[in-house]
Amino acid sequence: MTFAMAHNIDAFIGVVDATDDISDLAGGAGDAVLVTGIAIDRFATGWPLSASFVIRYKAALSAAATLSISSSVETAIDAAFTVPVVLQTTAFAVADTGAAGGSTQRGVFRIPCDFAGALQFVRLKFTPDLSASSTDIAELAVIAILGGQDYLPA
Image 1 (tube, rainbow, N blue to C red):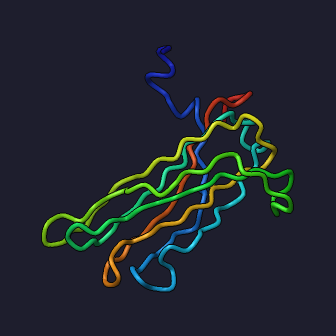
Image 2 (cartoon, rainbow, N blue to C red):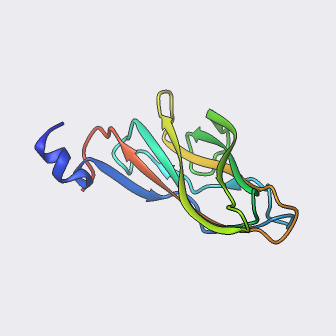
């Protein structure tokens, strides 16, 4: 690792918004529903070779109840994703579990993705799922940390 990388990581990565904010109520209309992310233009961001999609969450969970997340990353030649191609998928994984008596859990859930074979546009699609049948609620938002650009972000 160079001195510059150790002391100025912003010179080597790009960070973009990947979804709007999401609210999920256990057993409600938004629970276990697929969320389609914002199209990320790899050309406009320096042709990154990989990303870490970081899902930030705050979840009020009953005792032993869970927040789980599954995902897929798609690519396409246009921002409308007329013909999307799946780069990778991940099965449901537990992001967090409620403590005894219930608790508010905060954290991040990372989804790394290699853009080998990716076209100009990429996006994350994910499904948050609360295991409780009611009362539990989660607020989520996603950013993408981009790396390996042909040229470094400004």
